[in-house]
Image (cartoon, rainbow, N blue to C red):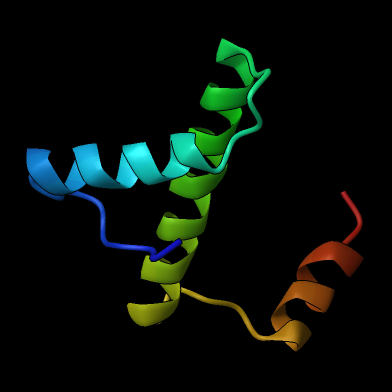
Length: 69
């Protein structure tokens, strides 16, 4: 499955959704579909953040989580 930026045109969205649905097993539920869309959306947002430099170094993460409330 190819990941694309958010804000795609309707035809591309239809094609991408069809590919996502084709990957699901024959017996599936609305919850399965919603979960796949949710995960896909989160991955695309994460990739966009990486491309835009909105990331933390491992050291920054360690410092953040080692702070006591």
